[in-house]
Length: 298
Image (tube, rainbow, N blue to C red):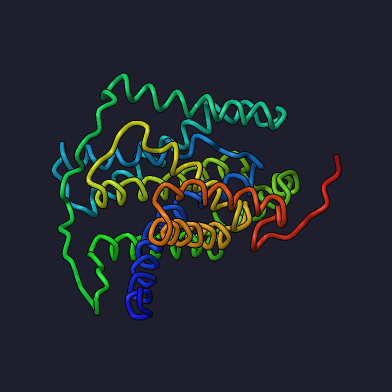
């Protein structure tokens, strides 16, 4: 392989990786927001991503909505689902040991998967073509409009989340609860409401990722959330779980690394590379790339 073809392939895989990483970043944001406040790893979050994809499918196939209304419908449906799950499954365990909440999250994950299978069957569904794909070629590099859409929507949603967290009263309350829940409660912050809004925001972002994946791959199924959910968790840990910019960076890095492994080695190495990153980051920098080591009394 000469240098020019290598460079073209490198750039092509970089583009593919950014698209994939944008999806991971959107899902990882939900993990990191919930962990930042509750210190809970919500392993049902990947299934919220799956519910968002099905909500978008319903909006597009049954309600005949276009792309943007379908996306907003899916985000709203997932936000409500996230709030209901938090209220019924996690809030009663707020004072319970962390392992109890973790096991509950795994139980919620399986409940969502197999309840949906019961109602819609396990067969994959073809996602409606609500966004036409156009291909652009630049010096041997291929970019399609769906990749541009994924990156643009992800960037806008990440910027919107950053604005909410940094410049609104809700965001200020989230940061206060994350820093010290008891003190925030004493200062008049409605902690339960803040946690509920956190689940809603994280779930809405995951739903957006589900719709974008449905558009890109043209197929959804009830178990589609398992592997992306785990990899988004890897991305959150890589960037520094509990840190919003870390989740964004971790998702993009993981997507690019996976794309490079697929392009230059073999697609069978994608998953191995992702979980190797998790092992390495836990061994050498458990706090993540943007995290800081903190002392904790036990």
